Length: 487
Image (cartoon, rainbow, N blue to C red; front, side, top):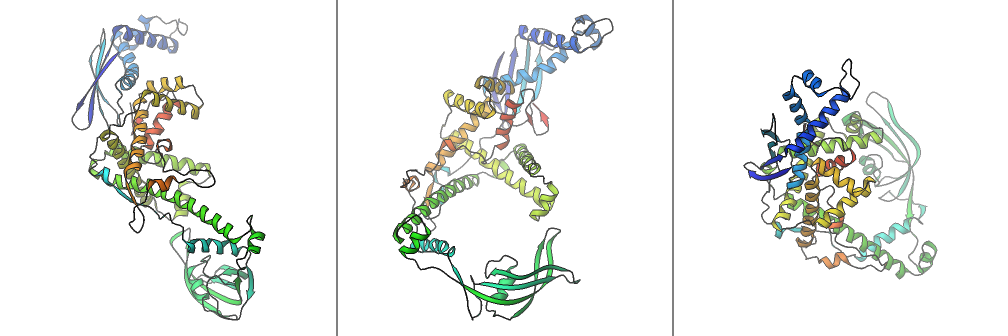
């Protein structure tokens, strides 16, 4: 079999395929043997039905050949995709140009591929990341959170304020008199917002013995608007949290450190590590979002958006089933109606596809290629995930025409790594942030890094392409689908 490709208008490629007569005869022979086993003809055992009888039952030799070619062309097409490394995004338009009745087979397949979209200014993007500086005020706040675990509650004779703990009786009723909330001697921290924000507003400045009455809207799973509840609250006592003094004695008792300075140094380093991780995530998310904004909506093929949307809905449904939750319950819990939810998923799918196309364009602009060794390494990783031999993975991907898709995903990974290495980073104040600071060695011995090709591009668009590739390996008998059509 031989295959060639040529570009045609509208982000399409014409694939010309020639299949030798010998290979066509082999396909025809396989079809005859299959039909012979399946056919139930009086007087003949399964597998022993003569070819002439099969031809007669099917309407002649031409009809038998047409059926064999119909079954074989998808496989020839998939092999041709692998040979010329085309990554299609829609079903092909196939036209048999010769060999329908006898001899060698030739056919043309016109298939839509991803457009190479312009991404002007991709090399000069700027991303804002959180400051890496740990202030003494932040260390103090973290130290206070640790002190709160050893805090004492001391009753006070003054109005309640934030962080005080009050004991209250609280009752809430609906307009029809139904009581929907009732709790006596409830310990409540002022400012926590555990019930409704209006309760905290009422408690601030209240004193022991005060009776508070107010109305507030309480969220309700059965109503997006919530329910109006009349609250009545009795304040029974007010306690202030008294934190232990910051001394070496307290530190030695409450932690593994001997002095305040040792504890502060440890807190400072831990917070620095967290800030590095936050900055890395902000860099990645910000770079991806900035790149996607360079792609215009009208440059995005709707077939890709629809497939990404389908995959996202499929994944969500699978996760909900694992939790024993239906889609209707999920919508109620999140306070969304179906139309609003589907619009949100479609918007996310479109942004993911824009990112996917933009990364592919960066790979093209920067001539980022995937070597055969890198491809084999990825196939090996896929084989490990699916617990198969690498040779089996390659054979199944080739049969499904997905080798080019795997290589394309690797190019995207390289494009993302290039992008993360080239965007300009600044903090919230506009001051430059060095990449060296995001790769700083911490005293624990673990180095934090900006991230590179090994991170992959999961969740950065093209999720449907990855799913299709692994599906082709896990289910070798299944044909890869695009939208609602078969390839």
